[in-house]
Image 1 (cartoon, rainbow, N blue to C red):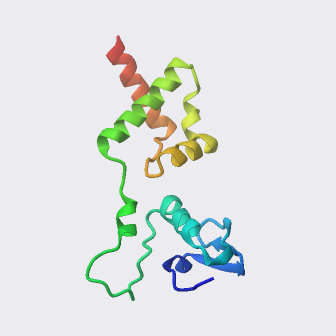
Image 2 (cartoon, rainbow, N blue to C red):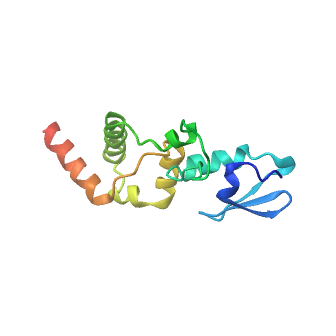
Length: 133
């Protein structure tokens, strides 16, 4: 495994073919020195981590710095509204938004979206209910 990749600032080499994420402790196969899967993990699961070190001397920022963008406000509102509609139409408990499995699903579908808490979702549902009246 080549240690030239910047991903090694965020991964620990466990063995020749195994690496461990320093943030979440997940193990990954990295046979043959392939670090693209490791890099993908850091970018998608830990988007606030910059993969460019202070020692790197470049006049132009590298692309991984731009991957930590947040969800555009209109998209955030649409996703939140769709979640509220799902809860209302299927008569699901509002606590669904606090369930780790639901948060994990949403983070997989839209990694930069922060799921609203149950209290916020209740306010959104009340607002939607009043608008429908």
